[in-house]
Image (cartoon, rainbow, N blue to C red; front, side, top):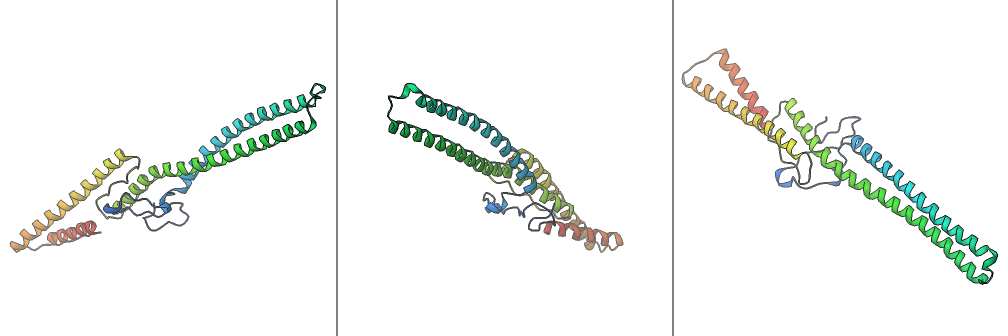
Length: 218
């Protein structure tokens, strides 16, 4: 996984930098698609299922409505309806045609609106899962590169809170332990210098202390 701020070639992950503590609850539109492959595939699947079910229901309602309209047309065309004025028949037929067209447009509009609302909702929902996973991946990359830093909290509304708190506890414990090691190395070096001790082992210890300090300072 690429480090935040740098998108790997061919990757579908959007750049993400863990927010500072004072800004950790803010969301930015550009970061809602953190893992396009995963999120859009999930959205496409759910939307496709919803469209299929909605289309089937719409077709059923449409057939019932058009059959009812056709029954009324056939009834008005029968010899027993001669008493009804032709002008009135024309108005009724026109009203039926308008109603059928309005019903079709309404169902189409509802279907399109449902897809849009559902798609946006699913992007936001999957973002609340992809965000914590991507943030954890960022800290894993930092540990791999020898750079330790305390983990910031997740934003309000993010999922996987319990899992992230366990990871944060592990990461912060690693940072604290490395800090104690640096303090211990410094005390040992100070004691050796006070005793005028000089050896290759102390040089290695000093190099190790500097390496640990660089890790925490990154």
